[in-house]
Amino acid sequence: MLLGSCLVFTSLYAKDAQNGKDLYYEAKCQKCHTSEDFTSEKRKVKDYAKLQWRVKRCDFTMDAGWFDEDVEDVVHYLNSSFYKFDTKK
Image (cartoon, rainbow, N blue to C red; front, side, top):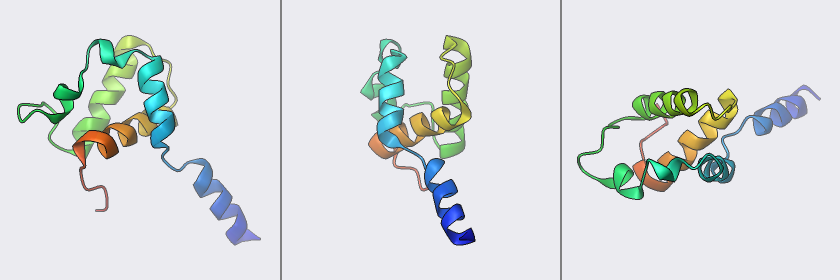
């Protein structure tokens, strides 16, 4: 029973790239950020921690109203779609 509860808890807070993508487009992030911003060699984000910081900053600046889980979903979407930073450390 305890194991089942842990699995349910874990799945509730698992990062969801599709939700991140939906949130990214609903907040109209693409008005300021194009795919080139994420793929260019001159991009400002060089690691996963910096990506998390930048998404949190955008959430605050644009008053998107995202919960911490939403921010992590957007980070996961951007990382899995563009950056490909290793998150298994």
